[in-house]
Each structure stands twice: as C-alpha cells, then as structure tokens.
Image 1 (cartoon, rainbow, N blue to C red):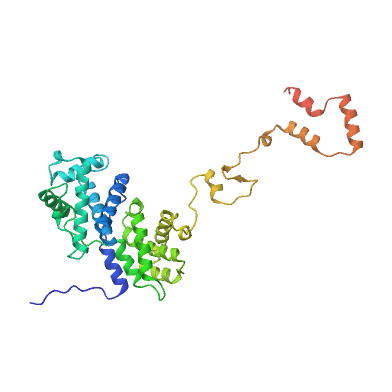
Image 2: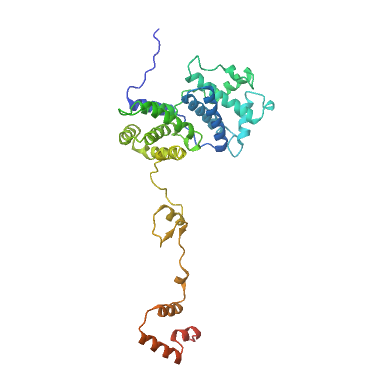
Length: 345
C-alpha cells in the first residue's frame, strides 16, 4: 500500500492561501483585561521553558480559540457569565472545581495550551511530557483538561500564526536583506503586541505577520517599495489599509525602543469640531492647541456702542477734533439720544 504524501502548494500565492485557510475566525475578545494577563503569562512561560517563538504564538492561538468557542456556547456570553465563571465552567468538565480557585483553573487551561503547542512544534527530545507539568495538578487532572481543551478545539491543531507568515515573507525578501535580523525583529514585535486585543481579530495572523515584516523593514531603515509590491501581488489591494494600520500599531507599541520605526500614515477623522485644530495646522489667529477660539465678546457689542468706539479710535485731524469738542459741549451725540430714548408707535 502506497503511503500518503501530502501535496504542498507549489506557487507562493497558493501557499499564502493555504496559510489563510488555516486561520480560525475569531472576534474581538470579550475579556480584554483578563486576556492580557493570561497571554502575558503564556508568553513568559514559553520563554522560561525555552520554547521557540512559534510555539508561544501557537499556544496563544489555542487559548484565543478556546475562549472564543466557549464564549459562544449557550448561556456563556459576556452578559451572562464573567470571565471567572466561564473559566470554572470550562474546568468543571475536567476537574473538581471545588478544590481549585479560578486562577488555578485558568492556569491549568494555559498549561494545556502550552503543552499542545509544544507537542506540535518542538523537537521530540525537547517537547515536554504532560506529566512534566504536574507541580500543582495530578496527571489525571492534566489529562482530563487536555481532553476537554481538545474537544473545544474540535481536535484541530493546525492553526496559522503570525510566525508562519514571517517565514513566508522572509523567504521572498530581496537580496541583501539580513534575514536573521529581520526574523529576530519580527519575533520581538509579535511578542510585545500579541497581548493587545487589536491583534486578536479574524485576520490577525496574516495581517499581523505582514505588518510585523513591514515594521522590521522600517526598524532597519530598508526601502519598502519592493516588499509592498509583494504584499499587493499576493494579498491584494484590499488588504493594504489593514496592513499599514497593523504596522503603525506595532510601531506605536515599540515606539520607545524603536522611535525611528514608527511611521504614522495619516491622522484619523475628527470626532467633533473641537478636534479639528488638533489635526490640522491652523494659523494662530484661528485656533489654539486647545481648540477653536470662541468668538470675541466685542463681536456681539450693540451697534451704537460699537460705532461710538470706532469713531473714538479713528484718527482725526486737529481741526476735526476741535470741531467735535465744540459740538459735544453744545449737545449730546445722536447715538446717545437714540440709546436713551424710547420709540413710540
């Protein structure tokens, strides 16, 4: 019997489509603060175990999918269950939740995500056994939770991560690009930004990976025209705005370490009139940094008082000034009579 050999896409565009087909469609996380804490712990734990950045990225992907699927189950929406209640619901199918606190059950879920990612990507001599994580949990509890997480994932473990796209784009980089340094910069960008909820949307893996590649070019001071042409030819013109937005967000997250790599494209649309001067360079007489100047009070001065002020400020010859003084001594001005009189009809 002939052994089955998987057929890999031959063309670059086909392989990119293959990676896109392996992404799991998720929505913006409902528990942003809790996700940040859990993902930060996942990334730190993978680093301490000595796992590759790709393993860390896959573990985060498993966690996001587990939380997304669990949130969409009946009676588990954000309005019905808090994050802690949801975690206990996930753990109740595998362990006795009365023995553990919510933080411990959450740690157990994260450990299983790391273990599955390591089994898939790490070498056999480096990949841990499930029993290696038995410091706070028994082997039976670990195995039961692993079965529960695999059930939520529908036993699908082949998800694309931003790291897969990094290697795809680095392989297409032009001659003269330091590929090793580019990969190192991309891994740093992914590690820092993966905790942000903005990078956990349906197109996070493909757009995140391409955006990290573009940012790495900025960080090295490399020209990006050819790279952007590659993006357009494979990803399509419709992805261009999302790609540059991702690169801008990455640059903002790493702005302290790499200020020269922050390349904002344009200012956003103003939400109200007061925001306009903060985004457009008006002259000083029109606006200030705090907002548009309010109309001056003298613009609403009654007409007769404004006329008197204008006449007083207007330059006059000595002869006219003397004539005006003689007239003022004889009678009040017509405007003063108008202001003190009452019209009758």
